[in-house]
Amino acid sequence: MFHCEGHSVRTHDLLEIDVKQLILSQTSAPQWVEEGLAKNPFVIVRRGPATRQEIPIGVRGTERSQRWAAFCHPKLVKSILTPPQLLSRTIPISRADAIPALRALNLLKDRWIDVAPPWGPVGSVGFELATGNYVAKPESDLDIVVYAEARITVDEAKSICDRAINLPAAIDIRAETSVYGFALREFASQSPAAILLRTPSGVVFGRDPWGW
Image 1 (spheres, rainbow, N blue to C red):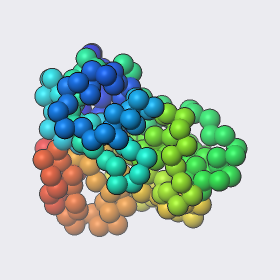
Image 2: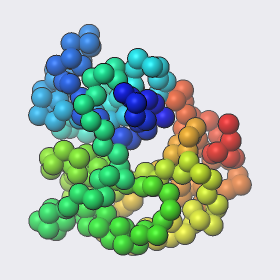
Image 3: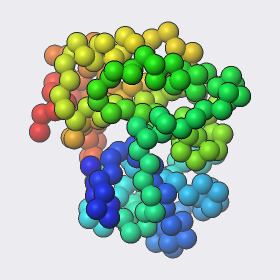
Image 4: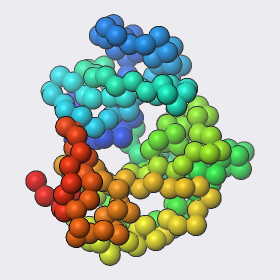
């Protein structure tokens, strides 16, 4: 969790930024970065080391190969959109008809109506809902983040995962604690065995995603 002008930002949040100032602060941005941000002034908070002066960010291009990692000063952030906030965005019927991942999200909202931890879409679906640009494709997966900062049990994780099967698109459920990121299905199926835990400095194997 990072701090930005009095607000906390977390991995997967979308930040609307001052594009001109961000580009001026970079020395090696690819040409597509400036072009893409001119149309879509949003970056994604990525997992990485942070300081009071730098938020680790990622920029999405129009092609899958176009991903660029950088850092952003908190003063360049104009607004913050969190994945849970994106659940209130309306999905046009024409898009839901064309994109299985968007249909899957509509179904998941009903199935997870009583899920306690905050959650929301990330990846291409989240980016589309945040920006209004049609970036999700018919073959796109539905990427979901669950902010499990309070400990959840294996049974609770299994219940969440069981209600995410048989959807129109493949679904990837990522969980985030205050320390680690991990695949919720892996935790549900393998705990108490060690699972892959993502940290700002890399990946480790551990048994307790809430241990720190």
